[in-house]
Image 1 (spheres, one colour):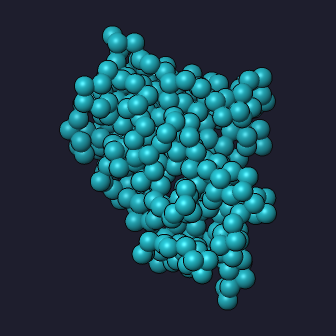
Image 2 (image 1 turned 90 degrees about the vertical axis):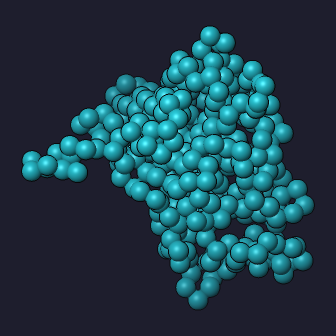
Length: 343
């Protein structure tokens, strides 16, 4: 609500929104810690050039990827904010092979998995990157172990991402709730509610497909056939692939279309990490009215949110979009004799 001078005198900030929606003080503290982490990372990303933060740090992360300087810095920022929030007990980061156990005197009820800087391979050429997170609560009677995170997305209490680009936008959802977007207002240093009840375009939106076609030789035949139909139908789809999952999913959520990173002969379990990429993005897409499928995975077509991780860094395939485009993929599997869920 703006007054006569044009200033918003009643801004719906992140903390205020979380308190209104949840009435859970610990959840407010958690989201505040995540919000501060994202502000810090955003600042580092924006100053990467002048502060000489481009380039490799000389290490590899938990999944064997080369770590950039900003990967290491962003990871430290997330860990420091979450450990000192007083509401977390276990943290899992893409950058750490082992879970991070919060000291008992600082521990709380939440377990958080995160990718502190998704798409960091694009940092040096100034392409959009982001942060992804999922939040679980400790199991009853648990003091906080990695096992508290090895659960399906049905038990995820909160999921979200932050994209660092022309604006810094934080998008998240609570279990069973709507998806909401917040934009960082640099004049007050707060995330402000700008996208209420975000919904996947009802008609499927723009005809866009997003996939790493460098892997096409390894895809199974139904995926190759579906992509061929997107490209050669009566109205061929446009191809849009950034290579930063946050950027590709954010565009898919806002504009529509389909995003695919399926299992293939080279990566039969998929390429994206389940806990801090698959589950949070699937939860957001589904609660915005879209479909988050794993495609053909472990012998059947299944939802990403039904997968139970067997390791904190395990992987899963992802196919996300609306019924219009998922139908093309499912029809390709049906023709190959694979049973698919109804849409």
